[in-house]
Length: 130
Image 1 (spheres, one colour):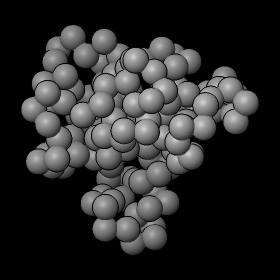
Image 2 (cartoon, helix red, strand yellow):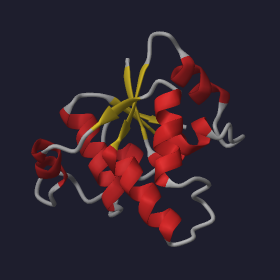
Image 3 (cartoon, one colour):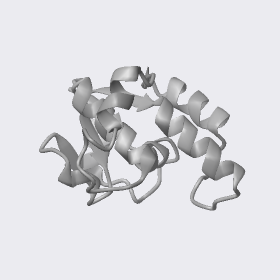
Image 4 (cartoon, one colour):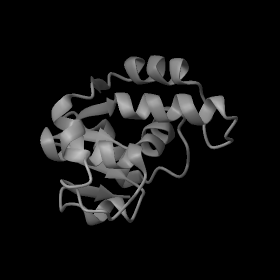
């Protein structure tokens, strides 16, 4: 299974945060799972970390290094993803641009998106809500 992580799930996984459920841990560590993080994750971490947000425990550079050390694959943002995230293509269930990009990427690739966001889960039955 190809599994794209939302930003908080990805951070919880690399920091061993207790907010990450056992079910999520099992899916992420399964030998049958290819775990992906997106340029959108790194972008979100960079912006929020630079603003001093307490919910960003690591810098984007550190996060990228931890993701690489964990064996996660990296998903670039392509024009096809940007088109899918456009207002006319994706329902307006959720307005967060990072989550919308991750959802668009998951739909285009296709991948399962693991998220803690209940609004993101409205987009598709391929969303894994934890």
